Image (cartoon, rainbow, N blue to C red):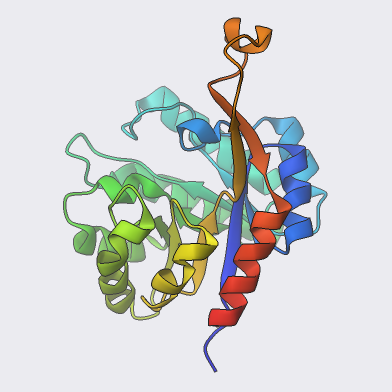
Length: 251
């Protein structure tokens, strides 16, 4: 029998937390601003997620754009790691790029050391996920070895393609290379229809937003004033449940 597949759902609202739970998700990645790939969520949402029944991993990303961070931004992410530990969350999701888009191993090593120290102090380790800064690297095989050496528990990746379904060959190669030393968490554009192709890579952790989006009216005052974008929506419990059913059927 194959290992059970883990479904992580990324959410950005209290309603999204409830939908992930209701749909049967195994874990939550907590963030804000999913429209730009996710940013660090507010403290109020962190507290709400911490009170829920699922393990929560906090995305620490202070702004949209790339992942080259100056000293001030590095300090913000270190603060986010502390906040996650103090809130009792299960883990953090972090990443940093050098100017050439290789992993910034120096900065990452500092954050990993901080997370490990905070976990030891509270008596419960923080699980460490390297986020999709990995998908921008020039050589993913080299970056995987760097992530494993740094002590990351998993890598969130689409196989270095915009969508995971387009990166399945790379995902399969990375999973084979990892050989159990580090977990590959496949994400980006993951829906029930592409689950069989993802599972065929051997990967046993899957990441999805499971959101239902709809266009907002151009005449809506909220859109005209810039309070909402061209689309709006949230995590859909039915989509989460459909993913769970497909993943369990393929386990």
